[in-house]
Each structure stands twice: as structure tokens, then as C-alpha cells.
Image 1 (tube, rainbow, N blue to C red):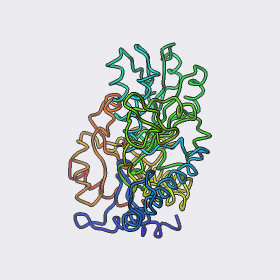
Image 2 (image 1 turned 30 degrees about the vertical axis):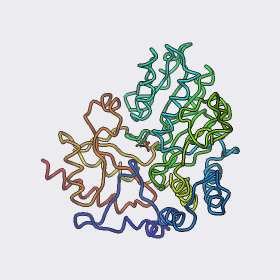
Image 3 (image 1 turned 45 degrees about the vertical axis):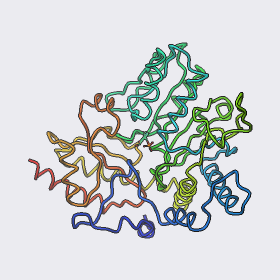
Image 4 (image 1 turned 60 degrees about the vertical axis):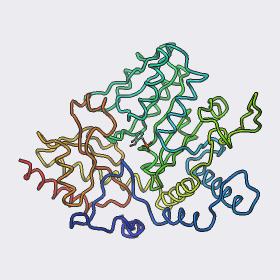
Length: 405
Ligand SMILES: Cc1ncc(COP(=O)(O)O)c(C=O)c1O
């Protein structure tokens, strides 16, 4: 990509040595690095506009409120949502899924109901449903994988019963990078009138997301994987669920009127945003969205796709490397192991060369069982990564293999 240097210059953290080597940051699936515009938007806020929002009449409070609500509008435009009230600021993907699970538990899910998940799911999209199921005699049904580690869509109809109340599925597997065909899921779900929750933690950072086109019930993601700050994320609710989802977190700011006898709740996003929200986080999230749009989300996808293809090809030439979920239809992630070696050893030795990778189960233990491994080494890319970095990674990986054998 022509503008690569200009992009990298915006990420000061990349310009450092780790153990005497130039940092190669391939752990973007866990969290991405932040451009100066995001860092400065947060420090600017604290320098010039910090105040509590929504209930103040003074100038600073109005300024902070405006910045916070402008952030919501920026996100609405980015995700192509007409009514910005459908976008709720949360602490992140995990928080968003918990809010949906607890909200649905109040007035939608009944004893003995069933929820369909996929084998790919991150623990964050398993545990909230499992907790509900354990307390309510509910059941989780799991979509299996085919031999090539893609989702077995043909198996879904057999999992559906009159008690199926939700399909909660990841858009992109954080471990394998494989992309779920949501159109197939939607066709089956709509035929059976089943709502869908999409875990977009690994799709929103890597590809264009149009929530009108996607047309699902719930979509969740985290800013920190999208060049934004930690501790802030998004819960998108369809118009129907904006009205019907119960709030699981009541508190100041969510109400119209309160008496000791009864509370009338606010309408729209505020109903789900109790207490003082992460104001600087929302502003940083919007700055991160602006950064992504300054590059272009399709450009990000295309660049990372090229990196995945390039890396997979080079890695395939190393006989000791086993790649999981090898495919061209991927978003920025490659999981692999070195034959007969523990992933932690591979990760630790790569770190000695300044290469940051993630090792372990990646919060997807059921998927690890399915792959019949304890863990993997995962490299995951962002817009600032380069083919040169992949060349360095390959060279050092070969050295690591020699050291371990
Ligand atoms: C697919 C997926 N879902 C959920 C999460 C949880 O995100 P967070 O820790 O930001 O809440 C992650 C984080 O790695 C993820 O990759």
C-alpha cells in the first residue's frame, strides 16, 4: 500500500525496539494500537471539555454532552444506522452481550428455551447464555464445523425447534479468522422467526459493516480492537429491541421520573446507559472511527487480506507449520502450531525477536477441543502491518523452529 509509511507514523508505539529488535505487532486480534488522533482526542477532552454530561446547564457540561452525542452520531453514520438511539455505549463486546442476555432473560426467554451458538464462539458469547441456561433449564445447541473448519450451515435446521429463541453467532472467528456467512444464518433464522445476535468484535475492525444491510437484531463490538480506547464498546439494537429489550442495569440517567413506588424509564439509548458513562472513551471511539474512515474500511479489509494470503503462503512452505482454518475467505487472522511444540514456547521465543503474537486457547476452549489442540499461536493483522514484517516473522519463525528441535 502506497500510504503505508504515513499510516505507521500515526502510531507512535510501533516505533520502538523490543529486546533489541524493531517491534512487529501481530496481536491486533487481542487489541489494536491507537493512532495519535485517538490519543489526542482523549487528552484534548480532559484538557478542554471534561465535565459530566446530560444533566448540566453550564457551558462545559453542554460541551461534553455535545461531544458524547456527536460520537454516537459518528458511529451511526459509520455503521449506516438512521436512528442513532439504536447505538448504546457499553464497556465492550462482553458487556454488550451480557446486557442482551440479562435483558432477554427478564421478559423474553422462558424456562426450557433453546439458544443456538456456533463452535467458533468466544467465551464472552457462551458464558452469559450458559449462565441463563443453567438457571432456567435452558439449552445451548451448537452448530458444528465441517472438516475444513468452516461452519456446517446445513446442520442448522436440525438444531431448530419450537423452543429456539435466539441465534448468537460470531461474525469472524477470533481464533481462525474465518468469516461467517450471515446471509445463510439470516435465511434460516427469518424462516423460523428467530432473532440473531452478531458478535462483531472481530469483524468491525476489519471490514465495512452496514447495519441496515446486515439487518440483524443485535450487533456488538469493542472500540479497543478498532484503533480506539479500552473500556468502551457498542450495542446495536434493532428498532424492535430498542423498545422491547429490558434494561438490566438501572441507574441515574436512565429515567424520566422516579418515585419510591415506581420508575418511568427514558426512551432510546439513555435507558441502557446508567451512571456516568465512559465519556472520553466514546470520544476516542469516534476518533478511531474517523481514523478507519480516513483509510477506508474496504482498504483495510483488502490490505489485511493481502497480508493473510502472503503469510499463509509463506507459512505453508515451512513443513513444521500446521495452519488451522486455512482459507482465502478470512479477516486478518492466522492460527497455527509448530508440530510437536507448545504454542507458549513458540510465542515466548518470537517475543525475544520483538514479535508480539498471542498463544493459548484465545478464549475459545470449545473450538480448541474441536481442533483437538490445547492452544495455538495466533498472528492477527491491522492496517499498519506490512509484508516486510511478515518476512521478518517468517525468518524468525524458522529460527525458532530450529531452536526448538
Ligand atoms: C469474537 C470475540 N468476541 C468477544 C470478545 C470479547 O471482547 P472484549 O474483551 O472487548 O469484551 C473478543 C475479544 O477478543 C472476541 O474476539
